[in-house]
Image: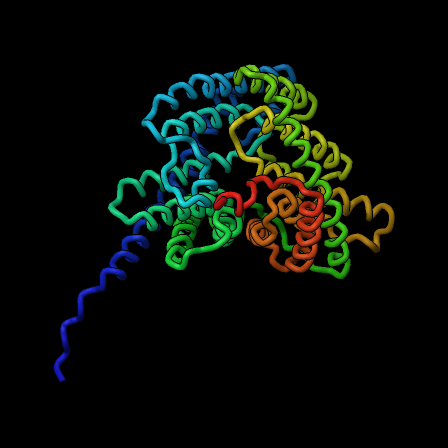
Length: 433
């Protein structure tokens, strides 16, 4: 029987193919946005400090008084941008209001406010680049989601596929910012949506994989945190449970203090004064302890090598927690996600070393404890234990520590939710209310 001409693809197949192509495009846009934002932060850092190579390294090269001046000037400038930009954003197209990208995904929306995104991105550059104790990754994901939103508005696609494109942008932004494509998918599943429509699964996987692959290709093919392999020992298991209890309490306390800080700063009506006061307080902290600048990446990387004095780490833990509460509470635009990893790594490291001074047989490797602590505090603060588990294992490459990480995340999550702390990203159910 002669071969028949292949039938033309069905309309459903063609619609799916268009969404897949759009998802790959979003992956490229997200990776590009991540690199561009990273470069711009470096430029602001260099203009403000005359140094480059990381905020903590730049802070250490400055005399204490200059750290204060840089932090205050950057915070005031960031506040002025928000103050002036708020009026400009309000004069934008009628009916387009600001909505966070996670809330947009939860509510089935795909249009993000262009002017607000520009204002918040510029303000974030000024805050993060001058030493505010917040993460640069949050604005990176916001930028990736906004680019996905713009693409969704331009392409001739049905509404449900445009919404899927926004979700792809969130996953691609997370994957490229944290070198964690699997965790990015879990992030949108557990936090942004709470469920996946069937037709969204493949595009989200593709967007996250594409953005992370480009980061691996353009930057370096390695996890975000490079550390030597840490063996799993019997003590790691019970330490995971103990750390879960301690880190769960720490995460709950951090959320409560962050809420109180925001409420206290909210009494100051002027945005420049509000952010400026936060800059003064963080600047004074940095005058004594320069390690409070930035998202904490360099300090966590050092702690994960295992050669830091635990007393020094304990001091940095307290100072960094205070600085993050002040920076985020004052309204500086940036993420708290990465500083949360800092709190987990340093608290786990300190707990392990303190136990070792009491009875060395009860403690395991402090590097393993730092990894476990990262997942535990992240689970407590986000109320998303699955995301926390996958994220930390993927970022560190220490998959052999999965069991203690599971124990710690479960206990930390249970403690934080039991005492009623509002999670960092709200409740997914609220987005559908």
